Image (cartoon, rainbow, N blue to C red; front, top):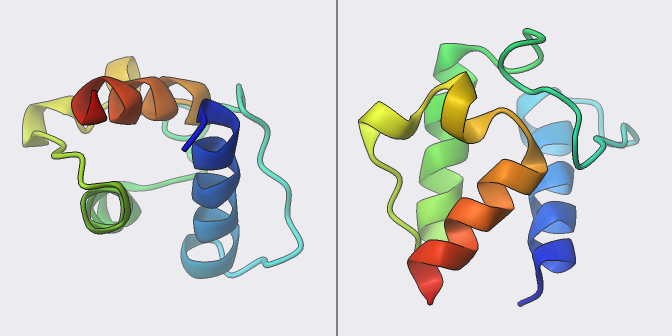
Amino acid sequence: MTTEEIISTLSKQIAEKILKQPGRAIGAEEPLISSGLIDSFSLMDLALFVEDTFGARIEDTELNANTFDSLTQLASLIQSRRA
């Protein structure tokens, strides 16, 4: 799976399941946490989705804006865990 495919999958999941706005497009560099788009509860849901969908373990210490604030950052983390 390419980085673009991962970003697309994540964007769709966040829009549909977390934001409940299926038509919303989330940009690859759009801040997720620092902008308040995703709260701490949603972050856990997203981490579980990443683990279930991509098989990439996300540590609790990584659930923050430094690691996880954009789809690009998250896709890079997923790719590094799957390699």
